[in-house]
Length: 159
Image (cartoon, rainbow, N blue to C red; front, side):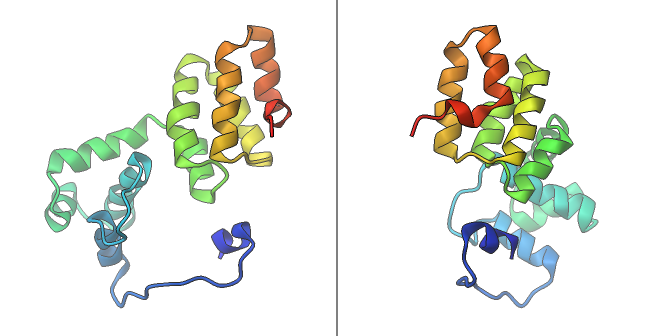
């Protein structure tokens, strides 16, 4: 419902599945949706199956047709990500592209800027195209300009 509200829609085409949540998550994980998942999305599925649904990593691997090391690597991906960033992605405030291509690398280089940008994006989200444009400005800017960029990202977007 939140996604529909965000898109300004009140209807959606759905595909009802008559199965338990665990089975539905496994279906999504093995590609029942027909679109490739981003790495972050891929990692959240086994995390929910292991931590939320109580399956072992071996069971997730076996039931999804994956290797145990694949499941383990996906779970490890989430350990390095700040909880605030994961929460913003889940809420739809930040796209998985922006999280993996902009905010995570930025957090490794300048954690303060990444945290400030995340707060700004949560307050006033930017599209992926706008974040890409913003990042181009950020990369070529001086330290002073970068401080302004993270504090007020929308001011630097050219339409």
